[in-house]
Image 1: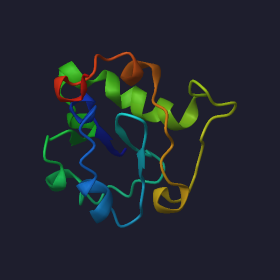
Image 2: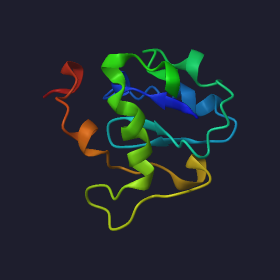
Image 3: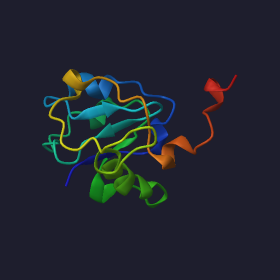
Image 4: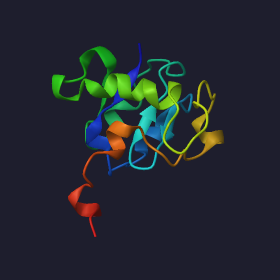
Length: 117
């Protein structure tokens, strides 16, 4: 089990959750942040720091956001568009840096109104 970042993070990416994560398991996609389910230690430090309340323990994700539980795992364990291999077990988002791509679910979402040009 791990924490999950839901769709309300899309196009917001405040990153304050990344600053408080003691194991640096929150990774940056192009439009959304993702928590690595195998690196998360379930400490919950990230949850109260999310200004859009996008972070929830995976068994408590609201029904309307449940697709993000699998999508969060897919970010690490599926080959993402524009990449040749899965990300897999990385070890530290701080050392890895921005991934720069998202899962098809997130990439297909309309841009947040504040980001439309």
